[in-house]
Structure formats: C-alpha cells, structure tokens
Length: 107
Image (cartoon, rainbow, N blue to C red):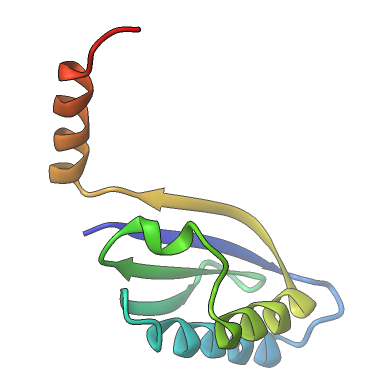
C-alpha cells in the first residue's frame, strides 16, 4: 500500500492545540478524497508531527488538491512549516517497477 508521510514543524508563535487541530482538519479533509484510504497524524515530539496518508495510488498527489484539502493545508501552513515529504511505495509495487524497468528498451 503506497503512502505519503509529511513532516510538519510548529512555528514559534503557534499554539500547540491549534497546531494539532489544524493537522486533524487536514486529515479529515484528506479522508473525503476518494483515493485516500486513511489519513492520520502522529506527534514526533512537542513541536513536530507527521501526517500519514494511505492511498490507492501515489498518482492522487500529482495534481492540485481538492479545494477543501487546500483550505485545510493553508490553515496548517499558517501554524507550521513542512520540513519533509516522503512518498512510500510498497515492496510489491517497487519490485514491479524494477522488473518493468529491466525490460524497457535502451535509448
């Protein structure tokens, strides 16, 4: 199952409760998107959290987000900054991609 993991760092002036609520709102908005199976956030420490999205395909993030997701992301960005974004591919898909690459003609 492919996933995205986004790391967020709280801005110095941001309230931790507001930071958490904004992350929860992003997760709720993400879950309304049909290609997203789950969206949850986890605390790393007092000032950092991650939002993990379990998705049907990573292609869902290749275009602009739906308006309700964009609104929630902008609200979170007012309180925190993204410090890292990762796209995780499950082992089966990674192997399939590798096998297809081995069969591709050389240019």
